[in-house]
Amino acid sequence: MEKSNQWLQKNKILPYLFFFLFNLIISNCYPADPNFKIKPLKNTSYSGFISRDFFQVVVEVRSPDKELTIGQERNYCKEKSLIERDKKTIPLLVKEASMETPNEKRFRYDEKYKKESSGLNTFVHEDPGWRESNENYLEDSLNFSLSRGEFAWFLDSMFIYREDYSEAGKCKFIYRNIQENLYEKVAKT
Image (cartoon, rainbow, N blue to C red):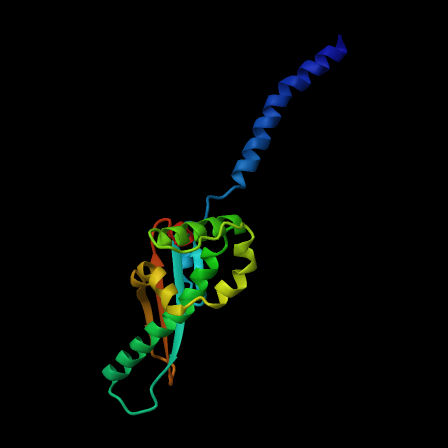
């Protein structure tokens, strides 16, 4: 009888013990950082995808050596930064877009090739190993202007977030692109 009473007393204490432990655990939990979404926006040094919806490129351009007015110097820096932005952005985008599996890449390339050659009397490669054997050749022949054309929608939607003329001889620009599902759109390109 004593054993059963001890067991009942333990069982009566058990729910209170669980309730106490649960409250102890919850009292030590803190809500997520409210600045979590703001912190990536304050990052001004990283180039690339910061999140799936947020891309930025940091560009530094040398100021012109000749004497120009402040307005002319800033316009010169903006023009040069656009060229540098494209040169830095396109390799990052091509890298992200090419992170598909080899089968997905081959399928996309073959479909694109068949669409382009439809109606023409051209040879369509049916050999599944053809893509892998010539992959290095195709990657080496990747033309900057063709890539610029493929990602024109992306580059045209970028905006200047910050211009910094504080360092002598340098202009620093931060370009950003913030869109919903941006990473997925780049992967589909």
